Image (tube, rainbow, N blue to C red; front, side, top):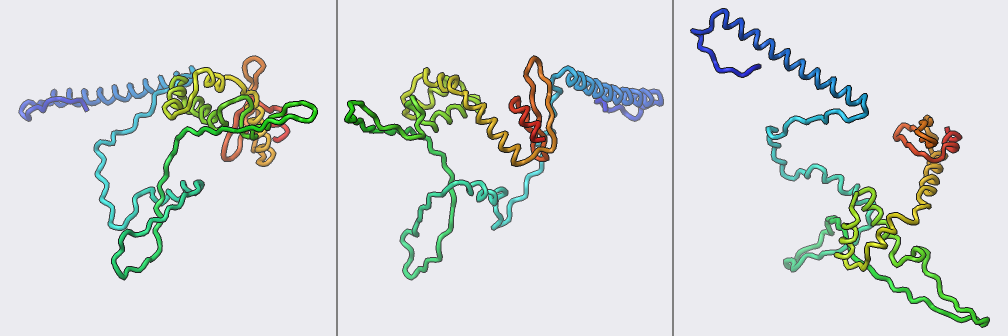
Length: 256
């Protein structure tokens, strides 16, 4: 309704009442037309490949206050904590009751889980034995298999850096600043090498995982989307997920 100041009853002649009704009707039509225009703009944006208007949720400022929890009632979501910590191996710390009153009897222990994230620098110094064979050749003991060849940084350190850079969108200056604050001696050169070099095995590993999943869980349907140039993408649809990959077109067709 259009806002207007109240009109005294003495001035509400039939003409005034008719005009007010026409104004209200026109205002309703204007609002309906504005909504139609917005809907048409969204449809045009979708046809152009653009994003439509984001949905705006109603205001939550005037929500009624939640009733206080009853005594003994658990906090919402606290029951799910055990599921989250099921994959973590707990470090059990037993806390005896300090200075119990004389004659007290122990009734066991109550478990209380606390999750923590520990970030600390770790330096492992390998003392590799060097030997000389009877033929005069010098041999050096090999490094453990989990040490990346030619690198002075562990595989977990490199994996954490790649995880921060790609999924978490952490910039290279911050990737350099964070380990230095934790005590890791590193320069910008190795970080740039980790982000840009020696990634040839990642597509093969992804292809192997996708192939194993296809043979274990046969897809409901699979089809190929013809891309620009020579690159195509294979879409694999299942009841619970949809995978789109430019790899393994031939193997995906066999799995279908």
